[in-house]
Image (cartoon, rainbow, N blue to C red; front, side, top):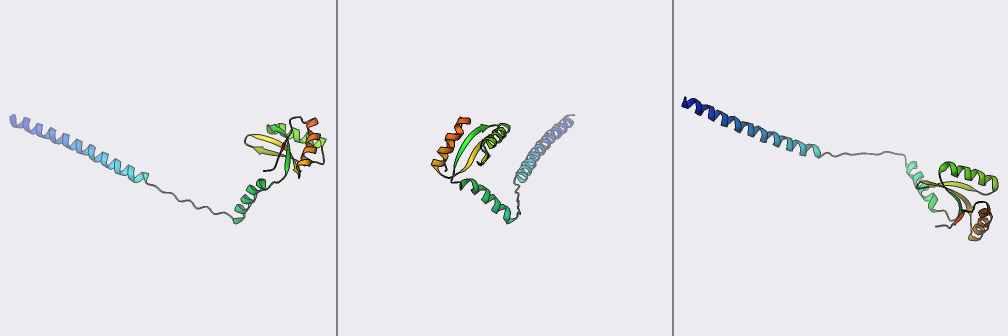
Length: 139
């Protein structure tokens, strides 16, 4: 009887050691697998026509090269900006006007003003009907 108890005791200790080794091996395999999977690299190649990059450069430089005065008559939402632009075109049909989108606002601006004196004269005419107008000097 004594030997049977010893044998079962030894078997229990052996099985516990095997279970501990299995846990250690599983943790080791999981850790190695995680390090292997996290070291991924990607490569992206983009092919585009040369004309596209030229157009982007022209677009970026178009606003920078403006050496003219402008008069801003409205700043706000798009639908209201369209209404102001339409009413301005009725009031002053020979003047050039455009809508500019900056940040979240749309701005209605009178363009094609070459000098400060011309800007001041047009401003004096415009502010009668559009009192919120402001002169914008070139950069």
